[in-house]
Image 1 (cartoon, rainbow, N blue to C red):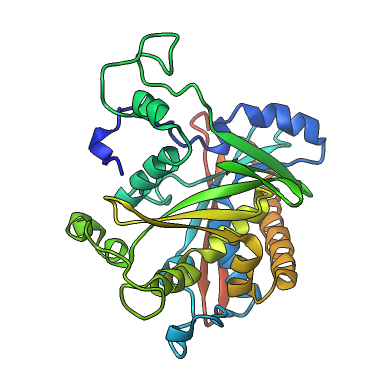
Image 2 (image 1 turned 90 degrees about the horizontal axis):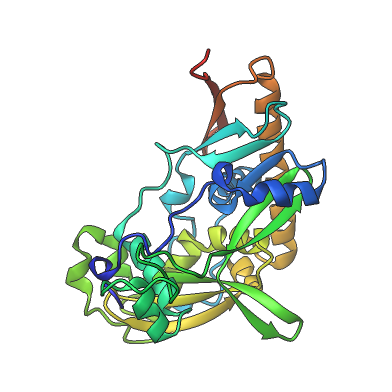
Length: 334
């Protein structure tokens, strides 16, 4: 695996929030007049996870099939209960369409594992020669060849846009496969091994860690799967449904080398999180509808102040449920 300091600066495009994505204008026009909110999966899945906890009365995961972890904790990890902050801004002077972005000072900070995730995603999707030429620190490629002197990739990221009632949602799609139902889209996820995730500040100390067995509570594939169920499977399930994807291609690694790969279908992920695909569809519809109601209520409450932005903070408590805090960020002209 390439190390972060070997990657050419600027070769991997930065994340572009919905409010700065010019493609929304075209896609939104094609989707029709009913579109009111433009958002991305990054601004949706964490909020949807919070809402699911509330409407499901904090239902735990389903760990059937993980024999070594019977009697172990079934609840989701604490990260999925963290508060979420969003910024809503109008996209036109008439204030009829709005963009929803993660609040900058509340957004997830980039850590070393997210950097490795960006690297691994490109290592498994590019031919070796193209990957080296585009992303590694070597002499700049000549204009007109693979990339330019500034390191910009000629291959843009691919997005799928889907509509749910008044929501237009952008999802990044990493790959496609020819399945029994025709072409299926899928996501690529990098997954560092347990000690690396637990001690990110000292990740290099665990670069020789290996998965040694299939089952068991230590150094096992089953441990890695157990942690995924409790920490990221809900996020994966919502991301895949929002993007119309059939599954996720997981790349297990220790930051130095790949340790294994697995393609997990959406139905299997949903079984561990919701119990079945039937309840997954119900949860998806309920949480997305509630998410839309929250945003509409916030916008309508401040309709007398069309300029500026709104910030919504969502917080949950297992005692009293969901708390919503909405305040206006005045426009500088005010």
